[in-house]
Length: 50
Image (cartoon, rainbow, N blue to C red):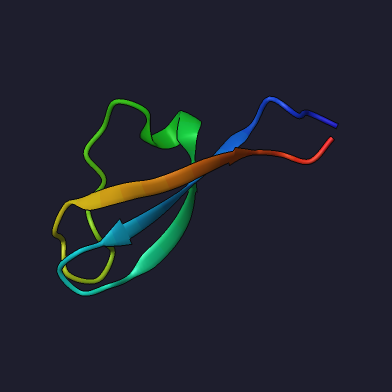
């Protein structure tokens, strides 16, 4: 099992959508909301269970 994959939880302040995304896909990028297109903010990260 690969335990190096870290997941982040993102929230849109414009429409309150919440999404779970892999950090490797979002690191260093501004993440647009899938519903309204506004920039999302990262709430927290966690590592995959061992």
